[in-house]
Image (cartoon, rainbow, N blue to C red; front, side):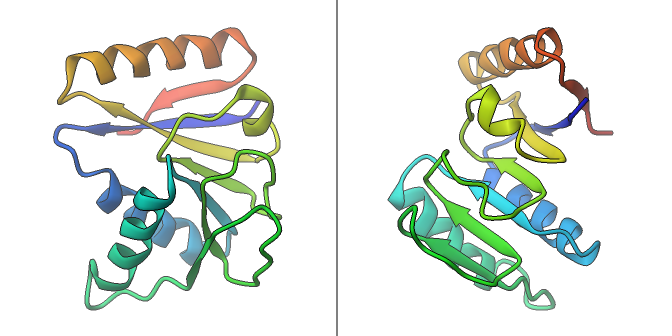
Length: 139
C-alpha cells in the first residue's frame, strides 16, 4: 500500500510546506515531484524555493513541459502524466489515483482554514483509503 501523508494547513501556507517537505525528502536522498495547478503556481513555487529560507538549498527545476528532462532531485511540474523517476509525490494540486500509484509515497494537504477545501481533502482521504492507499494525518 502506498502511504499518503496529509499535512494539516491551519492557514494558506502550501508553498512553505512544499519547501519543508522537499527539503526533508531531499535530505533522505529521495527524488521528488511537486505537482502544481498551473504555470503561475509553478513559477511562484520555483521562486519561493530559492528564497524561503536563507540557510536552505534545495536543488530543483520547474519543468515547463512533459518532455523536459533534468537531473535535479526536486522537480515542479503541472503535468500529471510522467513521474520523471521521482519516488515521492507532493500534491500541491490533487492528482488522479493511477498517477499516484507510480510513487512510493505521496503527500497531500488538509486545508483546514477553508471549509470547502477542508471538505474536499476529507473526501480525498476517504477515496485513497477505499482505493488501497494508506492515508494518514502527519503529526
